[in-house]
Picture 1 (cartoon, rainbow, N blue to C red):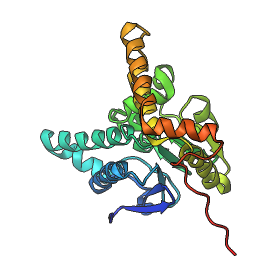
Picture 2 (tube, rainbow, N blue to C red):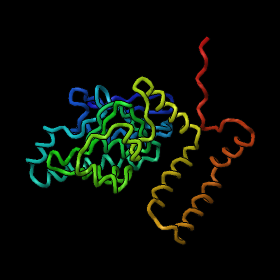
Picture 3 (cartoon, rainbow, N blue to C red):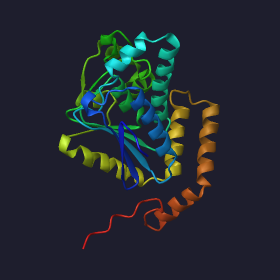
Length: 268
C-alpha cells in the first residue's frame, strides 16, 4: 500500500500505521482521513496482520483537525460540509469496528480528533509526555465525530467535564479515567507496545475477533434471557471450531498453538 500521508511498516505479524504530516503535527485533512480509513480497512482484511498499531511521526501523535481544512469546510455549502463530516465519522467507525486488535501508540499531543483516534483503538499505550484534550469547544465546535468513542473510553461522567472544559489531560490522569491502558517512559514506549502485541499474538485470531464482537453485544445491556442465550450460542459455536480444537490440544500438550509466531532465529 502506498499513501501520501501515511507510512505502513510491517514488524512480524503487526502492521504499524504511521501518520506522516509532522509539519502540521499530523493534523487531519481530507487526504489523511481518506488514507487512514482505507489503510485500516485493508489491513483488517489481511489475515497475515494480527495487530494494527497507529502512531505518529514527529513531535505529536495528532493535533486533530487541520485548521485551514476546517475553515474551508465551515465556509462550504451545507451538503459539502456534511459530506466531509460523514467521512470523518466513518474513519473513527472503521477503526473501532476492526476485527483485528488495534493499538494507539501516543507519544505527544493527541488533541481533538487525535484523542478520538486513541479512543477508537482497542488499546491505548501512552508516553509519560503524552497530552490529551477534547479541545473543540475552544474553537466554537463540539467533539461530535469522536464523541461515541471518547465517551466509551472515559465514561459519561468524565465526558461532561472534559468536553466542556477542554482541559489538557496528562498521561497519568488519562490512565486514571480509562482512556489509556499503559503509560511508559518515552524511550520505553515501543517496548511496551511490543509487549502488548506479543500478548495479543498468543491468542487465537478467530477467538479475538469473537471476543471483540462479544463486548459490543453485551456492553451496557441488562443480562436478560436474550443476552444469556446469545452468549451461550457464541461459546458453543466457537468451541466447535478448528481453532478451539488446536488451542485445547496445544494447552494439553504444553506447546505453542499453531497461530503463535515462531520466535526469531538467533543470529550466529
